[in-house]
Amino acid sequence: MPAFHLTYLSLLLLSACLLAAAIPKPDDEETIDANGVLNSPLDNDSDGEQHFEGEHHNKQYDHEAFLGEDDAKSFDQLPPEESKRRLGLIVERIDEDKDNFVTLSELKRWIEYTQRRYIDEDVGRMWKMHNTDGNETITWEAYRENVYGFLDTMDKEEIENDEHNMSFKRLQKRDRRRWGVADQDLDDKLTREEFTAFLHPEDHPAMKDIVLTETIEDIDTNADGKITLDEYIADMYRNSEPNDEEPEWVKSEREGFSKFRDLNGDGYLDREEVRTWIVPKDFDHAESEAKHLIFEADIDGDEKLTKAEILEKYDVFVGSQATDFGEALARHDEF
Image 1 (cartoon, rainbow, N blue to C red):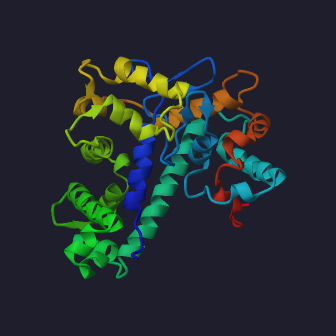
Image 2: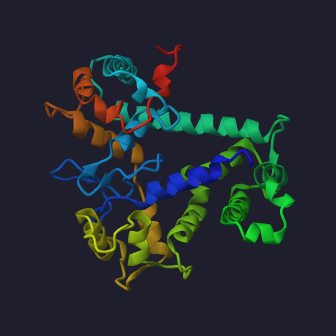
Image 3: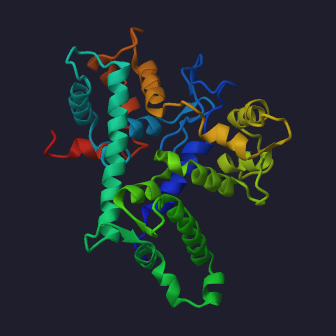
């Protein structure tokens, strides 16, 4: 079995991130409803978890946005007292001007920092894995051999009769296409910057079209280039019992498909409608998540957070038993 690369994992995370968003208003601006639910065009982060399903708040989304995905491995193993202590130390780092308040801008910069750190560390690991000779670029053939070379030892029938192998075959084709888009100088080699775009296309403007294409392919099960209501719902919800009634949040998504997604009312989402949905203009994820966290923890309503308010709501930020969180907090050299 090959050392599985993060391109596929990143794709899964990105798809879940982009495709399970809560229904926004038609102007695609984030809002907070009466239940404290933040509705935005991109209501999920790269953790691949849905932020809200109806009225059910998934705290893992906030946890990973607050500390970053790679630092979401061991915090849930800590007792509450220790997790609060370490969270308090992080709060002191977020409070840049040391005025004992965490403002929206400070929290936004922290979330942006955790995102950058995860991407930098992820790319660093993968660069070393696929570039053992320390070259300035990685060739497609070297990457393909490292990730998909095991397919070369199989005959066509062996591959086609094994769904697992066929999945890798499809992934190889998708990676090849994405590689070509990331390869800006068209030399079939990727610099570290281009390799970053390949692994994390959601963060590069030049990769927006390939993200859109891959997203449509993931949802469009009949491959007609459009997304039906059934395909839209099936991507986020599968009822294991056909006779069971759908949850309210699914009913809301059905209504939202017609009201806010299908802009021309033809019953389908075409490419431009999907683009409006998953990559809306001028949407700032970090600011949106910072606003949400302040809403969740701001007890006195002054639109900024004290350490006491954050610790009071520490389970929103870290420490849930349902999440893996906080490897950064366990690093002995930081605390």
